[in-house]
Image (cartoon, rainbow, N blue to C red; front, side, top):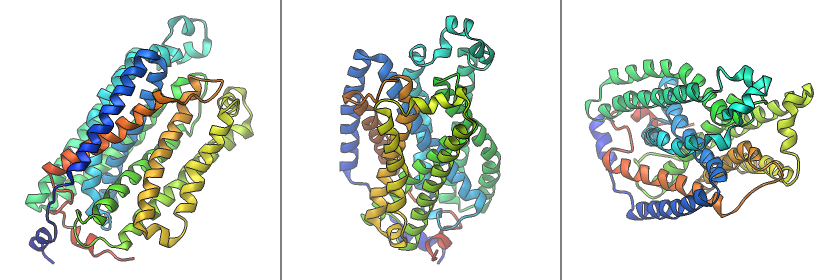
Length: 396
């Protein structure tokens, strides 16, 4: 099968207009709720905005990570899906905008931004060279700039290949991906530490960055899986996707669900075993009041349900199961981010209400809108990639 036959097999189709309608409806309702929430309780809303920021960061930078992993690993089975992941990576472009409300309310979120608190606290004073507004602003702007820079050059090469079919563009992206990987590891770790871990500046964990990484990759995989399966089942994707491709996506979701559980348990076990007050208070806070039920719920929602739901081989190949579990994992990631951040705002117990509803609506509305707009302008399959034929012919 030559390249011209690929173009015949793939016919670019318009996505249903209802997708944009739903996206705009979610955004409209979400924005109304968020605006009202900021007027009523700006601090609580800023915490929820932080969850939104870290969720979209997971989708954006996690998707770029998956693109680079494919190039570095030379994977062929995932080649037909790579453009979907590339489109999801474009979420990186709006992250600085999403971060603005959080940044403007940092004094209400972060204890280390209070000069009097730093002056009277030896621990905070020792961390002041790192935890200060100036350095925080510079390094996080640098993180966004680095992510967006690599996004532009890697995705630009991929799109050029649609028309040029130039193998050299793949080679360039392999080299760029090799450069990006260590940078990704560093920037995503410090981003998680800055935005979430520093909510409790007296606490520390050497696993926190890996914990967020595991959830990030899982969220990006879930978003990619949901879109690919939905498009394929509706006949809007390239011909040739089989249950073997579905199985590979399901197996990755299952693997990273276990990886998240392993990292989460390792963090808990090491802190429990050491029994140091400066470490244990963070977990003890999440085992007090109604937080204990939320913490138990995290184990069930984040691990038990996805584990059982994707355990068998048939479940990994079932499109309905994959759609359900992908959406579940995305919602579970929001649940996890809430568990990581909100105890700082409400130590006495879980605070859930209408204010929390608007931010997830905005998140899913933005994802749908971005994909709808991008899919109109470009192919949703990398038709010029020389690995596409082998990717479509992939069999277990």
